[in-house]
Amino acid sequence: MFKVIKNPVFTATVRVTAPTEGGVVESSFTARFKALPVSEMAAINTFTPEGTVDFLRAILVGWEGVADEAGEPIAFNDASRDWLIDIAYVRTAIINAYNAAMMGAKRGN
Image (tube, rainbow, N blue to C red):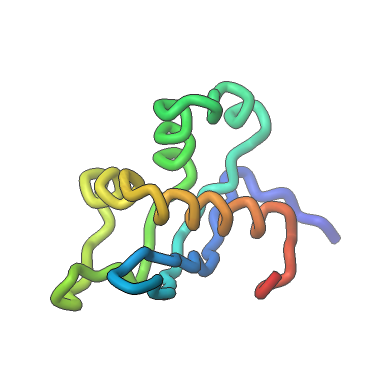
């Protein structure tokens, strides 16, 4: 039986590839996402920087495993979310994780 959930949320692993001196470092965190209805998606122009920020603010509703340089956990709130989504390579990783989960992609593809 298929049960319709009014405001679905889910978690997904966000795999981040960050540039460093001499290469890249890969890490991950667990994001909590809100599955946006098509009507809300249609209202957001993700072809603009502002629209992409609006999209990320709408879908990213929590996280686990995000820490600062000293390894101290960073609590999820509007300010920390906005700071994180302002980092280009993190932004891309969040969008990729959300899209893969929404499309039902197998993990690791």
